[in-house]
Length: 101
Image (cartoon, rainbow, N blue to C red; front, side, top):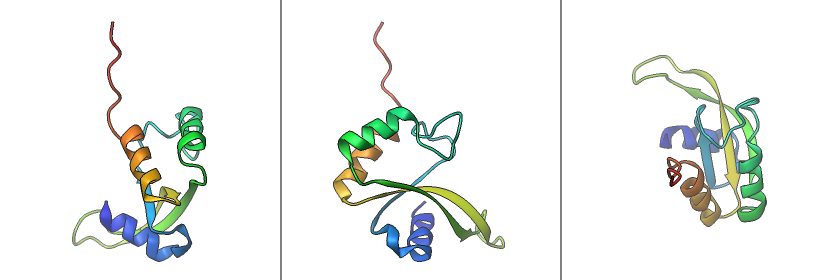
């Protein structure tokens, strides 16, 4: 994943230093439209990480070591502050806590 972040940052330096690449199955993505964030994730960002930007970036990546690289589209969240990235990652990339009965 670090290689993907580096490739994204090299391809688009305007994203800055605090970049998170969202997996296709990220629960922060809208199930009906994966090119968008879920309403809950958008509300969380508005409250906790204003200024975060969602974008789709193309990067040249090999599917496995030694394979021929190919263009791949990845969904990226860019944050203005490292604390915002860390808070988002903690809240949205961990498995959700089970609800008590």
